[in-house]
Amino acid sequence: MTDKTTSLSCDGCGIPLTGRIFSKRNAPKNGFCTSCYKKLPQVVCISCGKKHRTLKRAAFKCNACNTKERACVHCGENAFKGGRVIDGEITCAKCAHRVLSIRPCSVCHKKFKGTADWPESRPVCPECRNRLRKAKACAHCGTFSLFTSSDSKAGIHEPICSRCKTNARITCPSCHKYRRPAALDSKGRQICKDCHERGNKKFICPQCGKAGIKHSKSRCEDCYWLDYTIKTVSRCQSLLSNQWAKSCFADFIQSLVELKSPNQAAMKVERYFPFFAKIDTIFSSLDSLNAYALLDNFGPEGLRLFSMPYDYLSKEGLITPLTRDEINADSEKRAHINLINKADGKWYEKDVLAFYNHLETMAKRYADRGWKGDLARFKPRTITAALRAAILFYDHADAYNITSTRQVDQNIIDEFIYANPGYKNSLRALIRYINRHGKIFRKLKVEFHGRNIDANAFIPPKKYSDLIKKFLASEGKDTKKALIGIFMIMYAQPASRLVKLRMSDVLKGENGTFRMLFGEVELDLEPRIGDLFDRYLEHRHALSVMERDLDNEWLFPGRKYGCHISTAAVSCMIKEFGVTADQMYATAIFNFYQSGMRHPKVLVRAFGISVVTAIKYLKMINPRMFEEAESRQHAS
Image 1 (tube, one colour):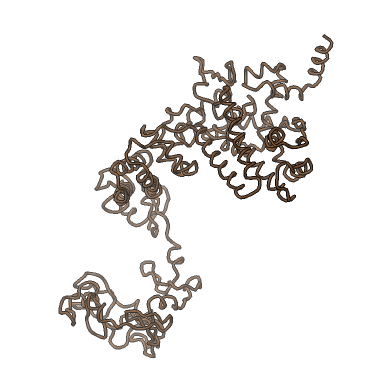
Image 2 (image 1 turned 90 degrees about the vertical axis):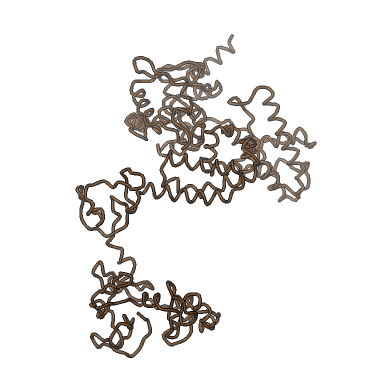
């Protein structure tokens, strides 16, 4: 077959050969056109056994076999595979590289070795030859494509594009291969020829001896992916230097195979190999491996990306896992450094450093006095918010051409708050610091406005009842969102407290009723909520691959090993409800008041609500009650 355009005519129909010429060597004279070539009989080669279209029937041997079995004219050895005809002479692959002349390409002018010529007999390198190919129209859809071919198995003898060629193929539901449909199975699905011939018999893998999905005649899909995984792991292990790292990496992949599947494990090998390659260079031995060093080198974002190998190390006891608060604290610490670096080389650089040291001192003072853990009031997030507001404020003040904190006046503060209202509360820490340590002549201030609850913060009764019905009727995986919604809209549990509920806070009585501990006392859940709780526990599972369901102590497990769900995940769920968290919280407290809970201490003990929050909401719901209480206090 050749692409040269000539004035010769087809040996079969006599039409001038203007396109591709087929079987030129086996033709009587010039060759055949596309249509005539498809009509030629297929003859089996006596050497390789492959079928070829030719007029020769007796003792036919194809061109490839003729080339392989003939001796090279240059070295005398058999041409074998890779042999070719150069200037009418048989040449083996070794001699071909030496015999081929170096010629300049007539298009890009780069020198190349080869025999690639354009139809005009101009030397063209293979790269330019592919680029200069003319697109041909598909015989079916008319789309011009560089890659057109016929499909004799499908009865298509005209050149068609790849889309039309594969348009009739389907993904076989039995073997999962993309093939031509041959018949329908017992369920009415289209299946391929191999699966149709096998019938209803299950494929028994010759390699593992188990029934499974066929990948090839010699093995099933699981065996194929398992062999692929083993090869990939061996290749990756050769790049590691320490034996403990190689063993740890292999054991991790083995755990993935057992917990998921060989297919999914094979997709994770190269993704998680950089984690083990890095710890191989950081740690000299397995005993020196620790979570704090991992956090320093990978950072919070790196541990999130490599959460699966990190969870594996935690599960095997090779490291002591970090808590979410420790990871968040490190993330905030990195944010502090980035914010401080923004002040480098500016006039307020020393002021920002002094303010940061003041904030760190305040945080240590709070921690020393017992305000830490769940009771922490001065968290790393507090420092980040204050530091971010300070940097933004100094950048704003820099536009007034001031060079010292003493030049800051009230007008600059008011204009900053007007332009950035969201930083008003975060700016208070800096203003307090400047008033105490800035040696200014007149004290600065940030105007305080009471944070009253919006009168429209309650969910309408119709919307409220629809949400309750939707939550109580939830099934399957939706029971998790429904239970979170019930706790927020009926029991006034904010996301920050909701995520920290433990399985130990749930008690189930002998009669099947559930009791929950939100605050200081246990509360009986309604039977309908208890049924929802039962359905949720049936579908509750640990989100971390390396963790079993019963090993996680939290009511709502998170994606990290041993951690609970994040507040960000709860926020995403609330958006699906069509209401806000503040509306759900305020509506729950309003319903408490309507049901007779009119004393703040009841809300504090039963639901863990703070005294200040309980008083604020009840004062808004019934201001008259508080006015009467205050008048009696003044009268006494």
